Image 1: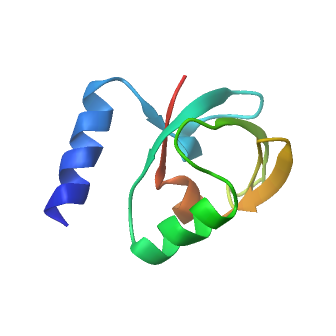
Image 2: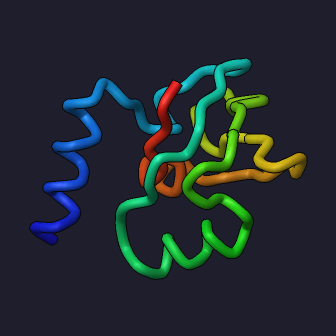
Length: 89
């Protein structure tokens, strides 16, 4: 848990953002994935890895799910999953 906190603080210092903070049409490069190992494994299995360009295509009216394009593939992510992905715009 402490390591996750350190990574979050470091990411915030560099003025990076969570994927869930981006709006439709905004994009960035995945820097890191933080959070529960099950969520990390799921995201990595979907092709969301550090260095991949990711673009927010649509956000549902209530903010969940979020449709993103990563590596040419459209994916739907829950907000809690998008919160785990830190991107550099």
